Length: 412
DNA sequence: GATGAGCGT
Image 1 (cartoon, rainbow, N blue to C red):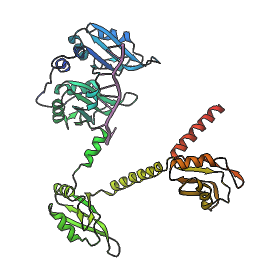
Image 2: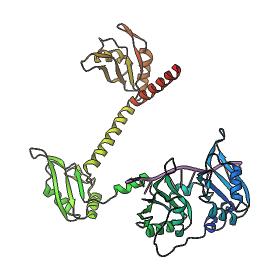
Image 3: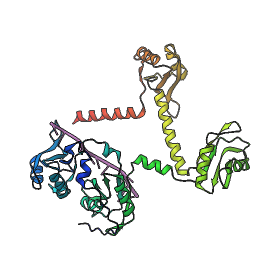
Image 4: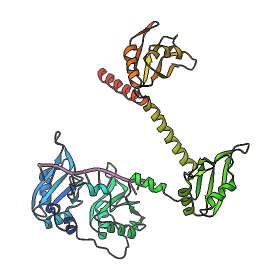
């Protein structure tokens, strides 16, 4: 059992679970009597659920949810009580009870997924001792308010991964828990407690981090360090300004300006990015570290490569079984009667010998498909041509893999 | 070091 030794002052109690879950007007009376039971072992049955939950109150109905066709358990179910008091008591007493050796999680049933998805009032905890389980986590955080859901991340064997999540029913409780528990010791480990952020949100939060160094490009060749200092100095004190130059001292038309204060750097970017300087539109932004810049270049390169392939989709023909005497020009000649040829290439090995295949791209997909229809199987010099729409590399690899697997299955 | 998945008759 985990030993919690958190010392936080000012015990904060949230609204009672029942009242909070019921909502003010009790518009949905079932909210308070219907429980969701998750993390069920797949062998758990309706009657097991009934037996367990009927111990603590009068159960009206239970159900383990199952896949319609396979009848396999989906690992969650519902328990409905006749009154809210019993439901609340069941939550209190049965949450994190083991059933078939697996700890169940009990929550009020929220059929509307919007709260779950919103991620509001949701906090993330890391550097947790591996001995801390769902229940210990719940006990630690329940003093800050009403918990909707609470879970330690585990590996497939059930071992804690040392981090977890607690979602409260209101932001104030979540903020309070963060304020009081972040950096505290639990089982002698200093935990981090913060707002839960999705990966995307985390990345953009990271990108917003402050910076002092500003990158500027699209300078005119005559722009000097002094000019930069004058232009950027409007926004605050500058510690350095540099125009990058080649070996002959000729400007590479980009440079860096370092500000004393990050706020000034941000203001300069805001004000100067896109502004005209000597008839050229400046790009002004946060200066990236080398690794960051390489990452960005790489992803941009991959993006344009993909776009280039997409652009040819339906326009590019793959041709094989070409006679060795066919070169780029002859290939173009063969296909030119069907339309405008944008590009045309016979593939060759490093020594220049034709591989007997090539690509012909047309300006419209109509031209390409007509050429395909007319030229596929046509005798050229000594052999019948094979013509098909060119496939993307990954696409072709995937298909080859499939046919290889089918072939393998046939052999077995 | 780490930032989720789950809601029926």
